Image 1 (spheres, rainbow, N blue to C red):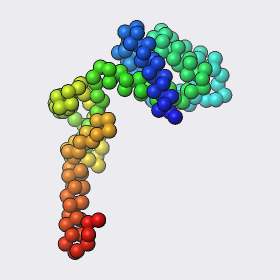
Image 2: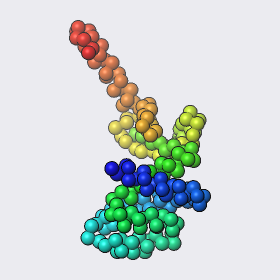
Image 3: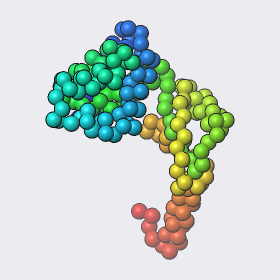
Image 4: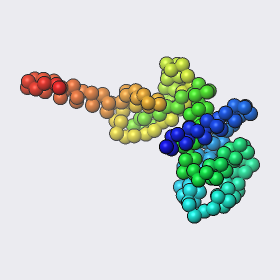
Length: 188
């Protein structure tokens, strides 16, 4: 349900953005709103609270965002409030960013590494992925010490596992298969 609502509202805003030629501007402004809601959990809780009236919620939004984001974005948030769908605002923003990226030929990817990539390594990996995919890849580095070494890249629903942990898991699986075959147990 959340995905459907997010898609519907995001698509409507995206169509408006195309008409007024503000796709990138809306994306940047929505990204700023997303960061505020993501970092300020208390603000999100207040915004979604059912005891707060629609007018009070609109006043809060006005006090924070009026003059800082396009009126079309404010209007979208007002509609979301009027329909009682505040809890879907993050889904709407995520879907709009996805639509915008798709239109601009941008793919977001995550590079999961044991230690942070320096800017040169990140740029090199980003350029390789962009070249391979034929799209502009925006790479976010996430540190996960379980990786041990190497890199695990997530692009949409695809995973490229060049991590040491992934290689060790493959070796372990193949050793188990060999052991099972050796003692006469079927692989099925």
